[in-house]
Image (cartoon, rainbow, N blue to C red; front, side):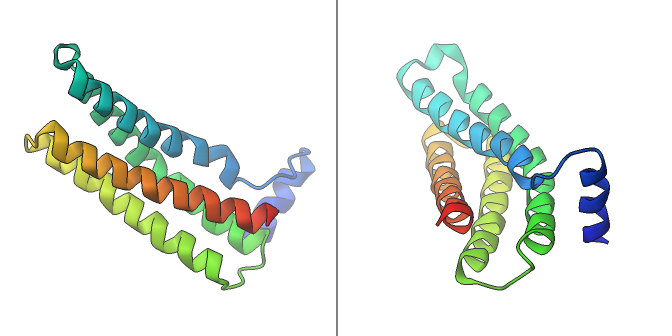
Length: 140
């Protein structure tokens, strides 16, 4: 089935993996959440904590198709081999999804900005680990 999807895409000239198309949205939103949260600590009157929250929500929405396309590419382009970097990526992807969900829940429950910043920083650490291990898989 996965081969059929890639074969279909190749008939229209699309030969690239699907995952890189999606990955930039949640990763960029995680970085945005951290930046807006940090700025909000300095200038409270701007309501940038709400912008950080919106970044977190958008990252959470797009993490699902990002994870799905990651699995598709792993199976279709990398043969589905269980190597250490894949296991790391799976663990970090699940952890990032949980942390994003926690950030959204905590914000809706009225958590303070400092607590949310810590969660956003943990999200960014996961994003960094995912990016590094993905780069190692493709270019290492």
